[in-house]
Image (cartoon, rainbow, N blue to C red; front, side, top):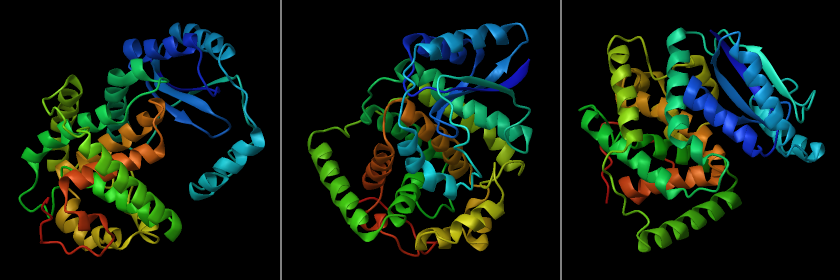
Length: 332
């Protein structure tokens, strides 16, 4: 068996392509996400034997040929030019593919085998649960409910030294990082929009979640229990699958809160081997990729972060400030 990276360059998949992707997820434990480098595409990763590979590629090519592949290339380049610069991609627009399937053997994704394993596992957990809903319109609220179920289970494992509700902290952290990147006008617009939406949704009872565990909750908790001994043995830490240098680069332009949080002193003392924070880091990063496949937007993603933060923390905690560790943020 060989691991492959397969890209299907299409804007909107045909039914045949959808069905082949679902089969790869269910029968071969493939993972799937959306990509933009060299053109809009669906990125499939997984292992196939030499006999099965050409059959799968043929099916994918047939599915792509029936898919919607046309878009304005100049608009596409303008849309992703800043993203390419931020991610330091040298030239992701040459060439731009449409209606093509590319196949490459993939020895590894990250530096360590355990990082590859955890990356594939977290992605496949969500793919196996949601793949039948991919490429269709979906509501954000059931996704929030699923995450609240998981975070609720994680509460039982919060460290006694945890400075705040670490089971939910990823949402607060990601919301503050998002708001920090906006200019003043956009920040005020988003904050007002999110507040109005939250108050409306709260009144309509959209946050009256059923927190009884689902199949997804159970699979996510199995992943959590798998990584606990790795963290205890210091084989896995908060930085992975990256290194401290990656954090140092991001902190240069970070919010006040993140600059304090990610100082080496605070990381070493509070967060580097916090099993709840590490589990959420892997799991939420996988989920964010799946939201796009569920036809949810990046704005939906950050509204989810806002909702979970509002439901968990006092309102003032959503503002950017140099948090002092040692005190606890309690919900209102």
